[in-house]
Figure 1: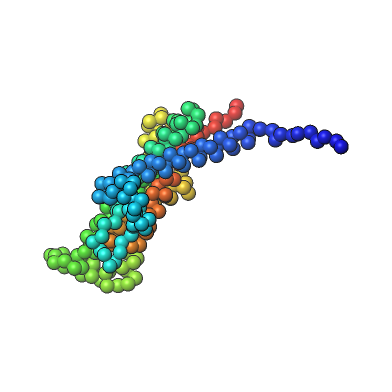
Figure 2: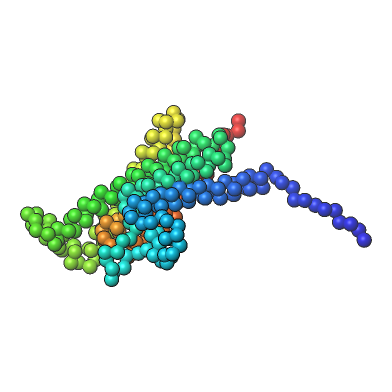
Length: 264
């Protein structure tokens, strides 16, 4: 009987790079999630929820702060809220976590690119779009409240009542306000972060808007719903996915690579 030679699959630069990339992405995903989880824990503590492991273990999972939603039958019951400050905190936690993970697991030559991506994520995908959505949404909420308040602005109050009593306008107007504000915020954030990175690094930095940039904007949708529909179960349900969406910002930061130089 002929003995078959033992063959080992050769480790090529391509397979090695793929393994390194997978390890980097996995590690960065974990550090980004840890950054977000730390922020969520601090937010929960600040809002009066217990972080005592024994109390958490003895509480039903559906009643944990991160899973609990508004119960219409118990409107005064405490529910974890993610508004402007809380979303900012989670976004910062995600980016810092991703940056630390990338710095530990990736080559030093890529760290500068990770810092640039951190600026792009914090400004272009979180801070500026969030601010663009928050202010117009709060102003619209005040406009909407005029329908039920005594005011000297009779024409504005009349318009507010018309919008509130019309089924189409009641949905279309806030959607238009939030949607246009978000679009303006994404474009402005991208331009500002590109200019800032160009000045910091002393060279032209032109980072286009990516598909992954839209994941963190779930926080903007959540914020708009939260501000426009206080104590809304729909807003609560959407908000539960915000920490996951914000983890994308940290992953993009930690996995950013230095651009390959063209061979002469």
